Length: 287
Image 1 (cartoon, rainbow, N blue to C red):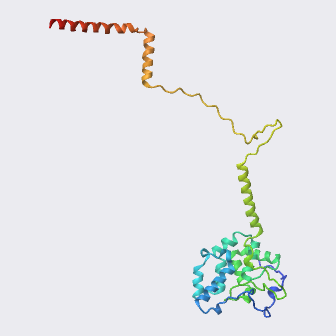
Image 2: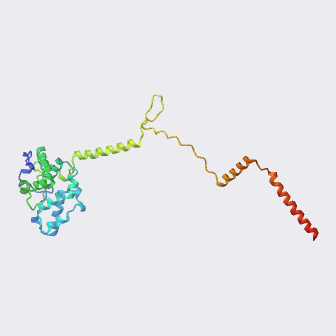
Image 3: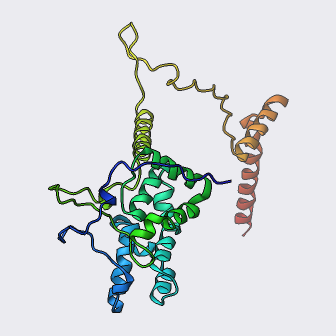
């Protein structure tokens, strides 16, 4: 069961004072309403103003444009309020604003862009964050667009704008919402903290801390020393060629059974050569 909106009291009367006595100037907000659209160019200008109010300049990319909603608005199928509703509940707005903020900062951001004012107090921030937590993004956006404050100031056909930013009794006006960061301090600190931790981890891994013992020589700590190398197994002798192994085996076998002398092999050769010489001589004399 969704909780009802908590009661909160306004802390500033600037946005609730009528501006009928203001003198128009360059810094006064320009009101874009579909009642003043007389040409297709005026419709394009109104659509650009709606994108600028919801997405701001940092997020106005062609990738984030909602062409289907633009076509429906141009043909009169939806009103300006419905077009604002579609932009605020789109996937691009969810990714760029809702996913990077907590509920408190996102509630402040939507009050600025949809109601055109700052939140009155922390109590209002808590009240709208409870609506966001219980009804979800679509229910939260519908609660803002269907509120009496939105309908009284913008109605169905006017693009929201920052109200009462410049007062006559002040020399400077408030900072425009477009110049404020779209994420809160906690997300910024989270990004900077993660960057510092990544840099420190890379620095610690790149460097090895060196300790100096009492003896005066530098030595690495036990955790940083390299583990002792395991003893290598004994190298196996290289394999010899087959011919060498055969000759070695034949020589070893002859040495075991009685070594054959060189002279015993030379005698038969000499006898054969003598016989051949004699046969040749006899043949020569007989001829």
